Length: 424
Image (cartoon, rainbow, N blue to C red):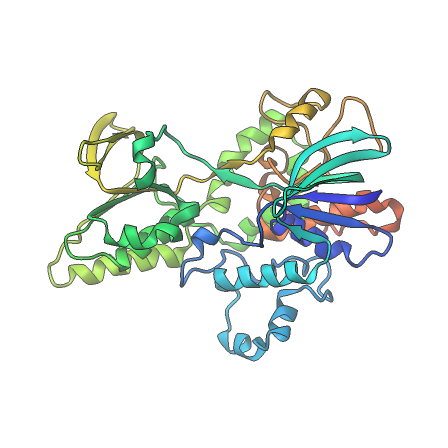
């Protein structure tokens, strides 16, 4: 019987695996169906940085002495002196992916090419059926506790006709189609977040003569990410516990007000876009570019020549229009990736609404029949934990809470005095 089985290996479960290695009294195993670790591989555009400090690595906020810190990765990779001279807290996204891959390669508890096909109750915990994709063999494991860390999957806001699929790309696959997008005659980006901005900037920097570029978002503005110190205190355990204590309706009302903190665009990215446009305008050249907020994509239609007609609506004026393009990039975000086998547990757990299951402060699903063997989730947490749902720094806090619950009195409480503000 294994103490903990993690399902999916993204930054959250990878960080949990790294922290659990410190405890000889906790056995663990983590399964991932992909053959190797990759963190948003389709968005590792050259020149893009993390939106958080390198201190928000897998372990530093819990144990800066761990061998799995980003700084120790630099030391082991003979890059520490160069990083010192680099003098940046926001590190290249590609390097963060290399760091995560390095940690995954160091941990024997992380197994790739292993797809979890079913989880069911068994005596003393959970029975986890795992298929090795290389040879198709099926194995069974028993665990006292399981941790769901299957992350998210692309959100597609409209129906995409089958004939349009080769020409419509979600931002998660941008690098796969980058060359074709650079060469297309007309490209539209849909979305308002950091991914949309980075993709538009990349297209703008590679825009060939005569190419038409457009960027639409249904948001009222291209919102800059709020980075003021007091605002950042909402990404602390102290605020997360306050948020979780609120009634469900109040939490749902609060989420839209956190958008500027969670989903804005880096000021530097917005500045680089504006500077690119401004420099082009100096000689009197007007860029072949459309940038328009308050405009929603309503439908995609395939023309006879395989071009795409986009039906758009400026919702404030209730004004509809259509444009014809060769390619579309949907930087429209993500939705929770809940495995099919989870449906067996839906009648067994408590729900706060038709779409939101109830989650305790320490990230456990709430079963109708109380049980000592826990089912933790790091997936689908916006409604319960707000800023801690997807934030890299707070993923360490999530892992600390899980470890504290698993080990009980053996584990020191998570430090909570993390903000100067009072929230209640």
